[in-house]
Length: 427
Ligand code: TRP
Image (cartoon, rainbow, N blue to C red):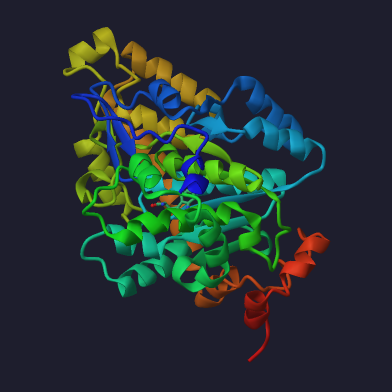
């Protein structure tokens, strides 16, 4: 017991629920009147805001302009980003780890955010990437979802993920129920060092929850340690995990275990949520068809949803809008443009015109429709090109194109562990 009890150095307290207070967990986002208070969340979770100096440093290190998600504050918080950049500057590479819970057939616009950003990180820093598909998680957490269906959705979703443009020569995509043999030894080390009460505090589990949920925490934690990928990563390699802020509890726990194990603590970089069409009190949700923009929507469907449901910060009448202008902070079309419109000058021009009342809600919705139609068109075109062979390529950890690039001598040893050898050898 004592061994596990102090596993977590950082706070593992679940936010205690008070009336009207915001709740952010991996399963629930409930914001107050003014939307999610992200400053408060940083404080609650104990992470750090990303500073302009850190953004400038990433630009200097990579020789590339920062991704607009960074420039516009969508990625806003981190843990140990600075240490990762310090090491990178000294020539020590890191790897990226992100993931997706395959809960729906089609991805919505919000689901693309971490993947577009991760692709930029991969290209800019020229580093390897692993992507976890948690079919096990969705099976355990979603009542009524069969394992077979979760496995199928994983493959469907992997096509969308690949369509984001990751470099196959630097990317490994895996489904937990396939890759568990390599993850399991690492997961066991983690499971042994997390108590039931820590998991209950951190995730808000109840006594009535199934035991699979408790054990799953370690399955999401394991890929944050490079020894989970003995066929192509050097053990002890640093890891950076791009994620939406609701995933932070998993990695708070993970970092606590890392500290005890003297493994490198994974660094984290957090995004805000994409607000739902109907307003920023909540995030876009795959299960709400009327207010989510799916990557499978036709342009017509999408424009219709924007026109009908997107919450407007503009004046209630034409006269009011002309006189007072729009409140950009609560205006969903403007907030979406801030995320998806690349051109900084164009965004500023639109913001000024709309805030002053010169531009009307209908006009900004039209511009948003144009921008998103293009995002969806590019995505659908790329997705159509992802065939089964491409999926199989991304999901093979023993490819020659991955081997040797990021392994030191240590890795050569780990690939001869019995599990890896069995997998590696032709039948
Ligand atoms: N739990 C995440 C989800 O439901 C999926 C996930 C697994 C993930 N590993 C991750 C997300 C690492 C971010 C980083 O979507």
